[in-house]
Image 1 (tube, one colour):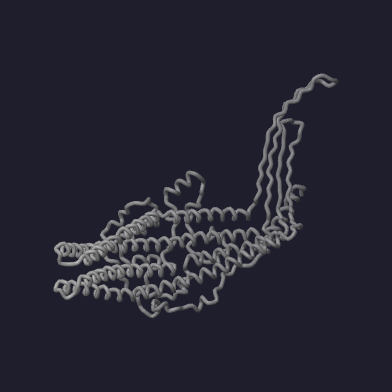
Image 2: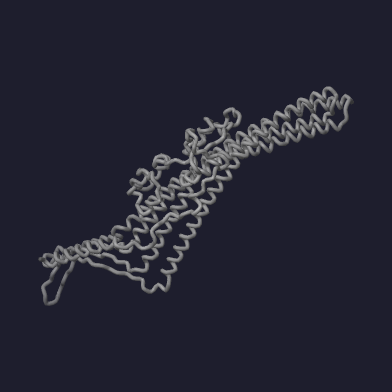
Length: 522
């Protein structure tokens, strides 16, 4: 057997042997999702909001705002999901993490491939001396490449892929969490706008009533039939009511501008809000068909916190791998020749292992492991805090829903009573049984109670919004086409070669057990 073939055969056997060893060891801890001790047994009744025995139709949490049955609101939600800048940035971060994962995936393959080649023309001349003159022209050629491949003996690259894969899923969960926040914020701003519109309308109507009373007292005073006190009191109350309108208009404009920002529009008129506002929706008692503990596990921010733990857990294995030698497979193939027929052609082939071992690290590796472990524990504690905060948000929102609903009934009766009192006060004043101060007091009570009842109805709607947000409602899986607008994708494709990364669908399952698997395999 020729020496070259024998060498190649031995090298091939060595390669197969070393590749087999690479799967033997993976350093670092295996990821375990943090456990919240109290979470499994946390099943509060949420003040009557949970009803597991009813046969009611379960409302889709992904589109909870549709319960308000408001076409203008649904239209604004649809626009924001296409135009919102924060949502676009979150989509781009998914693409960034997907590209980053592809970079880490490449570490499993040869890391160095150097190709070289050259051609050199040579002209030699010899004149004089004992030997005859000579003139030689020839060209020399050289070609070859060098290959370097660090083998993953200790699972360092595998842990890197595990960490990058968890970071990718974390970016997907973050995008879904932004959907939750965006939709809840838009619905809250929308009904805040509608509430403020109606409060302005109530203030104007009451100002008109009080203005008429003011004009009546003015005429009576000018006729010399009453004191100036009634006139000034009527005027003061009318102007006080009138002064509340500019403040409400400021709030209305600021709310509209906040809505415009969510829609990626400059401040100004929002045509979708020009529809004639009706009464705020009256909500029946909410009955959830699932226990909060199960609903909370689907909250994107909780899943995001768990993915962060998974990504950091793999970093410990990466740090531990620095204790051990880096074993590489090095090889080179070369060939050279010349056009001179008297010169031979040469070829070369070499392959073999290379070893790099950082023996003198003076505690750097050990302390780096400690750093990564401390960071992991921080994220575990952060996960615990995220779950705890989520449970608090649910409970806070639930009690607000119940108690604001109770206030609706009380304030409705209060408004009716104040309106009846105003009728009686006017009657008694006209008949001379009471002074005008009773009328002013009754007018003030009507305005105060009506405004308070409307504000409370808006608070009730906001409590419902907070409840669905706290349960993680308002997100859905997004296709790659919806993630980034088509115009943006075309711009990016023209600027850089994205290959299939702008086309391949996102994984639908975000199970944490897949943290060690590349997203390309999902």
